[in-house]
Length: 374
Figure 1 (tube, rainbow, N blue to C red):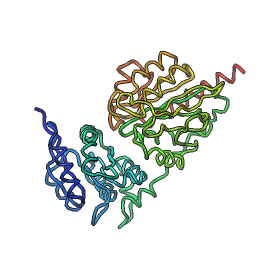
Figure 2: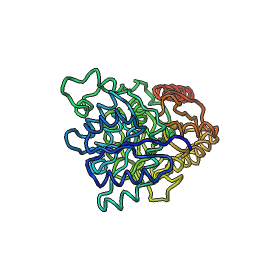
Figure 3: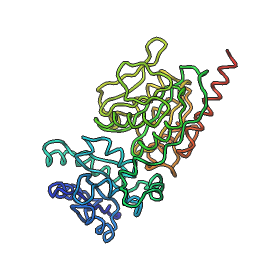
Figure 4: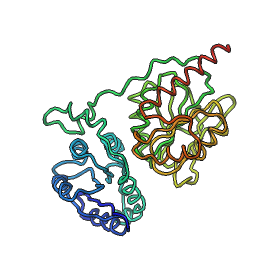
């Protein structure tokens, strides 16, 4: 048997620590090597036990989980899965945790804690497994290390982090409104999507996005991005027209695809069945791109575990789209891009920070061709 994944559970609730330990220890490939009821104890435990993954609550005595996460990712970057009631009620906290370097999160149920966590058992251990093989980076957090004033907390400094790169001043106004950009992502995708969108100019083609997220988080995710980008970013609403200069994010817990209404593209948001175990599913969105957008589509597959969207991305390519995948070195988890590449669905494999520029150059050449035809 291969080496077990060693997990430390950090939570101020004795019940939650007991339940999570039991769930972890039931797995053949992992073991809970320690539990801590506050971050200061956890700090010493991590030094002693050198775990592969930690699960971390947000609300704890002496130091909250966000402050602890910020310090941990500066001093000893390691895979962290956030497990907290606050992540569901305050999605902003979850997004801040992901920005600081957490790999993923699980929201505790609002009621019936013991039964609810047991129902979430498969999700919890799946995310621990993914975290154990994820690429953990300092990245943004290294900037905070040098900029953080004495006595400042990671959570307050995160709010004052260096501004995102400004979008390229490319003017694509001559480009046909027929063009659409499709993006799919999962684990690590919130920050990867941000990296793409902040570089898009205000007159970019419409952008449609599926990021694997549960209900209650995508509204805050869209609002957070909208405050950083030149384009308008929003959660998709059923029946609305998909406009240039806008990005539409699939609502958590719903399926999202593109349809046509006359000459316009419109959003379809529906309560369909999970596809590839996901709802929203990249497969659903990309299949609609293959069927309805064809050679006017551009698709991007970003970091994530599994194979959701790989087959549909190949269908998009066969229909004439031009497709990009994030490279392994810049992915948190290379699963989804690897599968798309294996399916022959990808035209270019690029580091995350090069994708938007390559796409804009491609769109610019398409705009020039359109202009010369007019």
